[in-house]
Length: 71
Image (tube, rainbow, N blue to C red; front, top):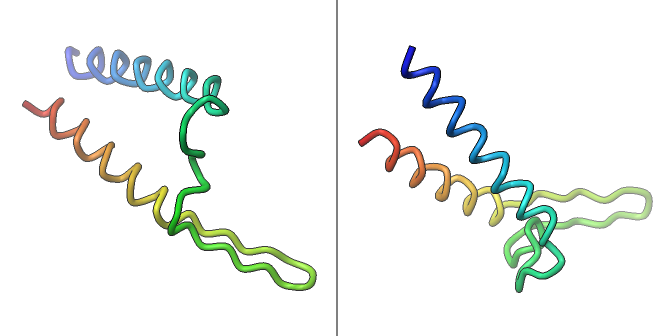
């Protein structure tokens, strides 16, 4: 039962952090989702957006957090 409790605590903390980032996103020195390396192709009638750098950065952050919690 302690595993579920830890998971709920981690999920709550993650939601608070995400909420703070979304609230203060206009004050950050960078825009999440608009980092250098994010790919955008604009056609006549469509736009394709692939946030490559953002995905790599989020993956690295989540990996570090999970590595800390496993110890």
